[in-house]
Length: 113
Length: 112
Image (cartoon, rainbow over all chains, first blue to last red; front, side):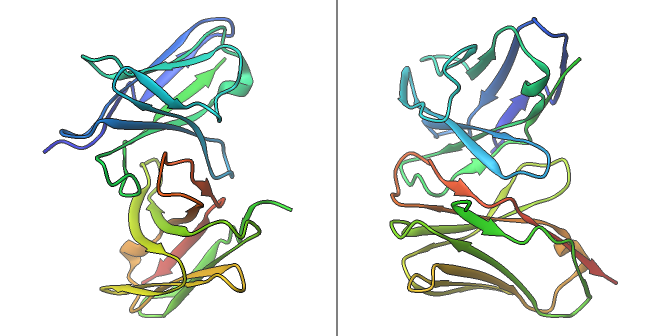
């Protein structure tokens, strides 16, 4: 049973480009959560999605960031017109109905140059 | 004041020592408390999950919650070099939505 799969593991983008981060939840999990981790800082919640619905996006920046979890396929976190401050590790987690028991992926490390 | 405070370390202990990791928080609404272990360049791994005050034990790990003091602890007995990692506390007022607040993490090194 594969765990939470994130790709790519590393992503380099120039300022102004778009970054697309993908997350495939564990089999049987329908709840997906995205977090951002900056160096020497804790994980910061960004968004909580169920299939085809955004449940809580209170941690998402209002501009340039969007997330989706379509009926088929992985969840996507999209960052448009990236800036240097977007450089961070982005983690995805998934859970079944027991929402506190979430499992994390290995993360995508985004570097904006 | 940050919502969740955690000593960043690094904390170095000899193999076999008892390790005590702690977090304090300011939001009295928090009821769900978790400890995660994160190895370098890896995703966090859930170690312990507790609800409200009290103790919970799982193998060499014991989690304690003292809501009156807004203080939680993770104890690791008979520490091993493989326990060397960053330990993150996390907490939430609800068991819904995963909008947890994480501490910055404590880096632990267990020396052989």
